[in-house]
Image 1 (spheres, rainbow, N blue to C red):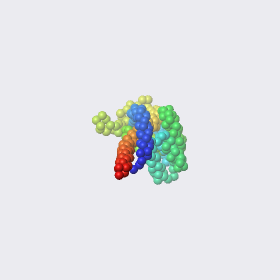
Image 2: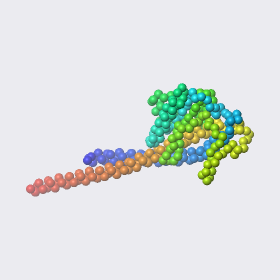
Image 3: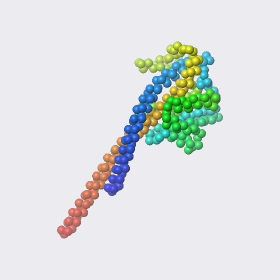
Image 4: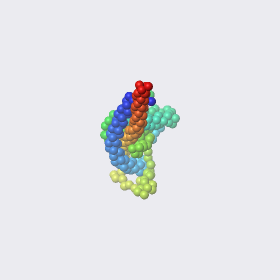
Length: 297
C-alpha cells in the first residue's frame, strides 16, 4: 500500500485537476448557450432562403454560374475543426471524415487535384504535419462574424466561377444538442437544384413545396442572381455557427465527465488514505504494546 505522503500528493493533484475541469465546464456552458442561441436563430432563415432557391426550376435557362456542373478536375474541401482541444472526439471525427473523403476523391476522380482550407487550428496543424496541401484559416474562429466569414465565402465563390474549382465540399460537425453532434459532409458548390422541396407541416407530415407556392417579383432570373450568392454566404456562416455550438457542447460534456471522474478518483484516494492511516496507527499501537510487554518481562 502506498505511504501516506504519496496518497496525500495524489489527492492534492486530483483535487486541483477537478477544480480546473469544473471551471472550464462553467466557461464552456456560458459560451455554449450563446452559440446555441445563434445557430437556432440562424437555421430557419437559411432554410427558408434555400427552399426558395431550390423551388426555382433552372431548366428553362434560369441558371447562375454557381449552378454550373462540369467535369471535376479541381476539388476544394473545407474542413472545420476548432482552435482548442479538450473537447473529446470533436476534432478527431472531423479529421477522420476528411481523410475518408480524400480517399473517395482519389477513387472517384483519379485525375483531379484536391486543395483543403482548414478552418480551425487543430485541423490545420494535422494536415500541415502530413504535408497535405491546405490553407490555414484558423483566424476566422477568433472573430466569427458574418462579414469575416462572408469574405472567405465570396473568395471561394469567385474562384468557382473562374473554374479554379469544380466541386466544393464542407466537412464539419452539425449541432444537435450538447451531448451529440452530427458529422456532416455537404456539397456547397455547385448549387444542388430540386424543382420540388420536401416540407414538413405542423402535423409532422411531409408535403411537397413546388414552384407554384411562390409568386416571383420582379422575376425569377433577378431573384436567382441576387439571392444565390446571399444564400451561399448564409449557408457558410451557418456551418461555422453549427461547428462552434458543437465544439462548446462537446467541451462542456468532456469537462463534466472529467470532473465526475476526478470526484470518483478522490473518493477512492481518500479511502486508500484512511486505510493507510489506520494501518499506520495500528502498527504504532502494536509497537507500543510490544515494548511495554517487553519491559514488564
